Image 1 (tube, one colour):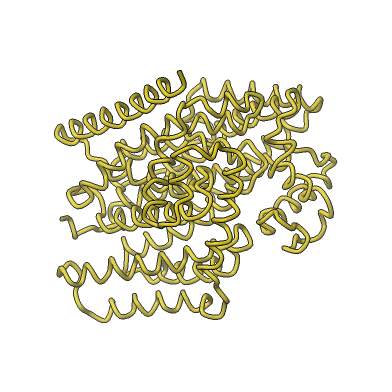
Image 2 (cartoon, rainbow, N blue to C red):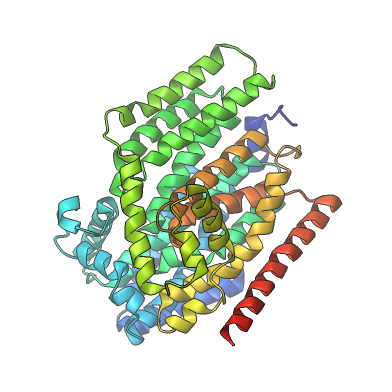
Length: 484
């Protein structure tokens, strides 16, 4: 195992040089599609407002990213994701304005839009929004709508979606930065990660639909980035101060985005302590005062949680029952898959939930067959083959996480375990793919940053892909025979 990992030296070797222009590195086809999407949105709304709002929003986000980082890979990740987000926002606007998309006009997205465009000068509260969780996201949208209303732009849906596009693009930039921490010497891994992130259907969903998942993803990635930075560079005082500040902000604000989300912070502390203890036991980390300081910093970052009343078991039970009831109303009770998803046994529910999130629904066109007039389900359908292709890389990464010489193994282990923790939380409650978006992005980072390029590794990946795709084909044949 590679334990001599000089992070500052390797990052400096990768980051030297000036940042490239905002669109200088983008493929021409992606830029052309984004311009066409802007024109399409202007036609759908009968105004030039979408072009103005999205262009200015992208510029503001791009300047903010450039003011924080100077790595061209991080900047390119933002640029590519933003122009991709503009494309999917154009598709979503056609569905909403021309096809009366029920996924946008009569669902959570409609509720978020209505709450965000009323009483824009006041911060949202839990009592005001009722069953719609996420007062922090609603407050952010309100300020954004208020800002543009002062500029003479009417509070139309595209204004909030423009903010979503910026947030999701910042998620892509943060993902690229995480990948660089884990494997800073590989430009090929950085390019692969940029490609995978830009083509994730669930990220398209978070960008193009008026929902809060982009906010949840960005805050989760920033917290995990702070932890990975400390793992890669434990002697950096700046990294420790950033970690403590990030944890305090997380515990204070996470539940304002999604109920129970702050409990992720405690899970990450437990994962870090377990990895640190393992390194000490195996002799990979000297038993010096630095270990004690690290553990004390974890306890310090957890202090805000000690003053908060957590009802983890009760909260999980309530959420699980609510989602089980909803699933029972929309899925035939005779379905064996549904019965396993509703199992009271945690291991059964977790194991089948992982299989369900990666390989189902069957057939793959189920969403489009049931809701052909919804962009929401169009983007979810696009995520299905993404999950099929992601799974072999994740398995290969998990099997060989200790073998890479250019990857920090413990940072990679932390990301994999954090993704497993997030998957477990989703499997115990909703088993909804978009709720697992932070875990899916983390697994994408691990797959790209932890993947090897040698001949044996490529052969292993081909075998794993063959197994997964064969399983998918078999599931579709079983569905076909069952439906005859």
